[in-house]
Image 1: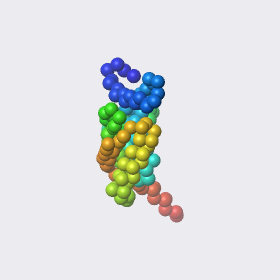
Image 2: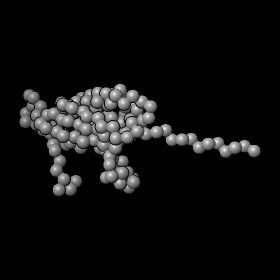
Image 3: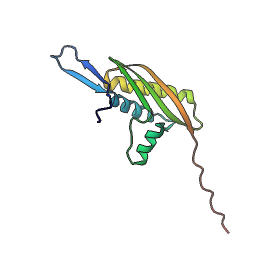
Image 4: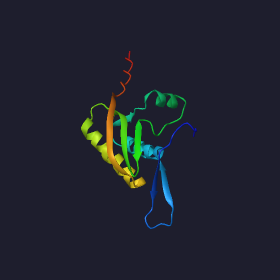
Length: 136
């Protein structure tokens, strides 16, 4: 990790422990949120912008693509930027994404999700099947 990149770290001290602490980087929260969002049926993919597209072309899969996390003390706000499949109910899929992301982040990290904002950046249409060649 480069020195010019600031990394927000959440520190949770366990109650009743003898001075130990748990530090969770915001990239970890973003990875959990991205995986939880992509598991929902109706999500075609995540929208990561130009930088995410370049990383994918270079062969690296970015698990935090399309996810923005803000961590303040023991709570977080998550923004999910996704592409939805054509023909599904956007409101239903967005609600499932919110619930799945909130559940995953809260159960795995112990942070409280104050908001999970879902931004639909596009619609993915099914690929047209090649027309069969005419038989003579």
